[in-house]
Length: 210
Ligand SMILES: [Zn+2]
Image 1 (tube, rainbow, N blue to C red):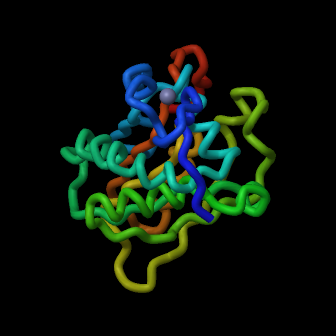
Image 2 (spheres, rainbow, N blue to C red):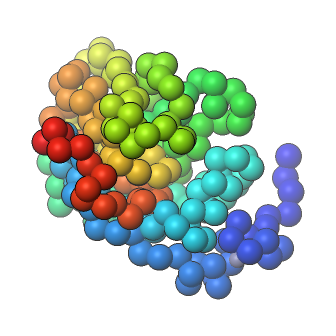
């Protein structure tokens, strides 16, 4: 069903994200890539308008906006391109089955599809999320440990380079878990692009993770 788009930042009618709000997006903070990820790039910082934008995608089923954001993901991918050793496939870090049922869609999957359309790269479903407690509100140490993914073992040779797409990177735990699963089935080179990255304080990362 089509409806009149409204800016997720300020509610202005007519566009998914108005130019004033685009100007208000904070640049993504530079963070070290999570373990197992060769490079990561994000489009904006998860704060202010950027945070409202991501929450709007998650909780208000703004599927049309996801397509509009694919172009900005392609720009983020260009930043990590030097770390890609082979022509990659695009995949995504799937949300939980429960959330997907409640929302009716998986925003990471739609972002990955949009990135595939924008770049011409193949999009492949490879990751399956094992059940784990919801991350929202969980202590940060728990978020680091969860979630876990398994990657489907490819029938032919594995994609040697993979781009993992997600809507927001917080601790990096999700991307690290995705990378571990992909390496386990033979991918050699994993990069990640996300719409948003939370400002990351060094003290937030548990010391035991290397
Ligand atoms: Zn706006």
